[in-house]
Length: 128
Figure 1: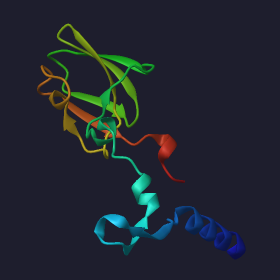
Figure 2: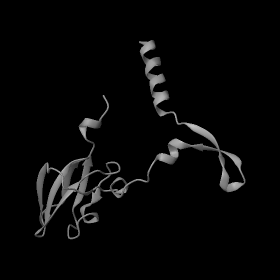
Figure 3: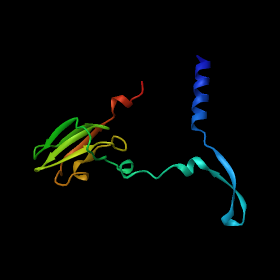
Figure 4: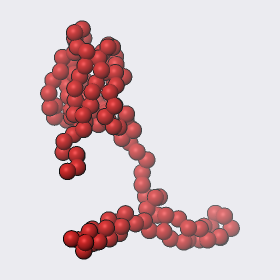
């Protein structure tokens, strides 16, 4: 068992290592600089990745929710795509949230004041 854990730790360590090279930087008088090329190759996060509450989606809808004046809360699963209908308008929303803290639905859909969104973690991503 200890051997398997040691091998697993080695694989993880090797897969997360970054490559660092020294190269001559001609823009600053030819001095030697250390640069992590792995860090250079990473792109900036997309708008969807930075969206705190998720984003609109054209993907397959898991369910349709109609929000009316009696609606006080909306329960969703993180990474669930839901079509939400409010006041004659409709939006398809991917709840790709940063964490699972509750938030007002009005943060993503104007006209949905007084409705709180409760997000639970997707069971597919729970450890165990």
